Image 1 (cartoon, rainbow, N blue to C red):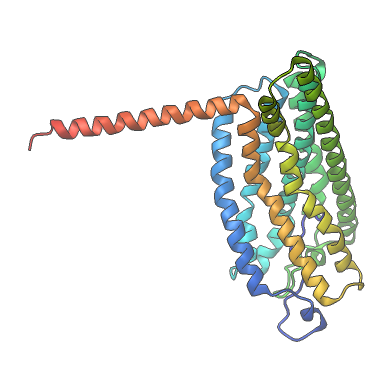
Image 2: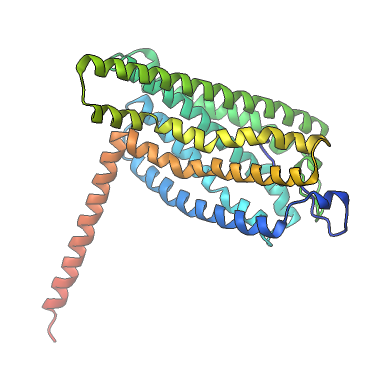
Length: 339
């Protein structure tokens, strides 16, 4: 996965062989600009609300710590969407393209993989709570989770930092869209290292999450067979637990499968032009699903975190009471005013 990848097609005005393989820019600009605009508004509202609620909840468990880090990564990703919108619009400039290549795209993918890592950590934590609900080890202490979270952010930032600085310092030509054209030789080599590392991060977390939820399912059914719990209650808990798995598969799996043939289409002459264009749209469409993660993660907070749900309802109830009292005061004041 390219941590600073934008469009890899050129947009020359003259008729060239590369133009024949370029997608319809007018169509893609409209579709993806509208799509990311909707994601930006929804993600900004939902994650701002989530942060507002989480700031009222003490970090007394690993689960809360991981969720707080996830919402910070999601909000940071959401703030990058306007640059994605601008680069797809008529407001695109060579200077903006350079900024997108060096900074915003790097942050976009940085937050994506941080979210992937924390979804894996959440899965481990859920399994530990299911297998040993009353256990308390050093790994279950919030302090350990905080240190681990800080390590994740630091290591990922150090991994992508060279992608921000290993550039030639040149302005991108008007018709150029390849970020690789601005990289130094060392930057291109580091880019390959980052790609390989991110693939390892994704696939290892995919295996980790699947294994964890398989073990969680086994523990749940063992528990309900012993206690003879109601099937309705078992189904509810099972559905909530698998929400993380569903979000992971919807948002990240399609993109990483589409990424492989798309990369080959850009590095080898083994595909026809029509196939290259189809792979481009497939990559961009699945990338938007990865961006959708910033809007779906709040569902995890609501359905899996009882503290979040309770605090959210409490805050909304307080706000509702405040508005009702204010309206009553206004009405009372208007009735007391002489005509």
